[in-house]
Length: 395
Image (tube, rainbow, N blue to C red; front, side, top):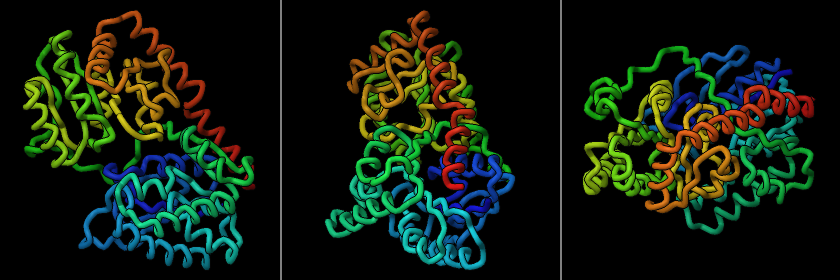
């Protein structure tokens, strides 16, 4: 079987969100499908046996592609469409696997080239336009709603990544048997063809966590983007109270652009916690994993959103206690048996972190339950079985 995968994003670039595309493509190839992966010019090449990566021009002078909708992505998607047509003319694909907005133009090409179409739905695209404040145009948002509904009904298979998105998609679909929920729960190391550049701090020196954390510290670690919905402000305001209860606590925040790091560093100084709080800025995925492996407690202080954060699955399997806010984004996967859940207030978050640090018996119980949950519902073998079932349906 031969398939065309279309990914409208930088692939592979940890500054974007390419992990779901990487793992979906990796497992598809492992299951015996020959894959052509069409993507943007920006990104690092990765090694995936059985996958041929095809790139449109990068247009470096236009800058880098950011997360979320943008005029640059709209421009690049024109070329993605042209390359798709050329590939469909030259090749006979059993199916086309379209990620995100690529499904819209694939929907137009489907009757002409008579392929089966898979829509990999990572989010609702009309909601993205609103959430990222890209536009207030009712006409544009309405057009995306019409296209999204048409895609969900016309595709041969629809993949969603969490219960909330699944419920939304099923409400618009005519045939629920075409729906597959396949969570983004894998975190195998990404095999780059060329090694990444050594990670650096904002000051330009090699990043080394030991340079920043005093001996005997108890690291509380957040790793991810520093967008407002991630609740970094909430975490920083909770931390002075954590230090009152556990003076050895040390906060390490991994990720974020230089502007975001500067903004939150200023808040940390205002709160008087800058001596016990370090921001690394963006680092390589491998270094982020190394930091998280040293954590006494992992935290996910998200305050908004409905999609489950990708990192939650790795945190479940990590063997480290997880503190997360008690919002639907988290509780689709987490409950009090596997994590320490806190109300999204500084007072409750701080007390929950203290409990997670000091309550050894409860820590151990939750960690064991979290690892069992991951093995049972989200492990690699479960992921493979879901992808295999999808391919069997298409075949």
